[in-house]
Image (cartoon, rainbow, N blue to C red; front, side, top):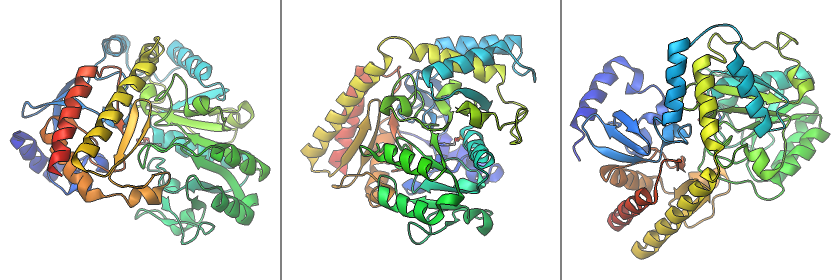
Length: 428
Ligand code: PLP
């Protein structure tokens, strides 16, 4: 494959855009460097880059594109929004329709508020939890990503029940001292943290099914225990469903697993590809938000008619009979085929898959927490990533990300992908 135009564009981008990318995860730094491929056009499960190469896409823009690119129903909704005004700064009927749809799908959200991104949604759930409880600290889980607001860019301290350290320059020690990070899927360190800081904890923030160190499901009872102990300590439970909402079923991970949080943040899929976030939860908590209550949150673009109508259209597609079963079926074929190819070529891997989302880890160990994901082989992943790219398979350039199937992928795409996997594994 020839990537010369992508390379040229990246050289030019480096002169004008910091690092040549508008989100660090798009750079190829984590896969040994090089120019990220610049895409020009996308339709269904496919991408075409600026050099004219075609790809099967499993990035799905890091999750939102669950119906495939340029889905006609969503495109029509966006066209309608473009023709009737994309930003009003007033209430619209669409946002009421959409809030009702979200509430119906995820009944733990008794009241909803729209934002522009997942980051904003999570950031505000923390503020609301603090306003409701009158407490300052939060507990989060190592390796879960919750956007780029200061509070969630805090790494674990030296032990499970120590306060955090800033994970990014510009995050102050004071902010880090309000965050405690404990391992995912282990209840004892969490209980230890509560025993130490319990009456200062406003909220416990967790991805109920992790999407940020690969797809990692909670071990049985983990989320139930979090709920119980957090509530006993007077803290709220916040689910970050920015990846998981509408990914595995029409509803959230909370509906799939039947464990309800007090507050939920979401984004990605619910915008049908346009910028969006939303948060919601128990009515007595949500009433702390302005204009009803003292916790402030706002947004010029929040609830804009374009994102909302795209989101409605996306959920309409996802509501159709059998769409999740089909992504699950294709996911199963993909998983089985990858495992067979690995066995054939003597490549050691572990796959975590839930329905239409999966992660390949280059390890012989199970992966249920961040340390295990971190210990997997990044160098082999980097080689695999590039071998797949050269065969027209677009994956996320990081060993921590998932492959996402969409309603646009077909069995034929899976067959072609498995041929590429076979070839890549042969070369590793
Ligand atoms: N929460 C989770 C679980 C995410 O995966 C992300 C983004 O990847 C965010 C929050 C932040 O969302 P956004 O990038 O829309 O700000």
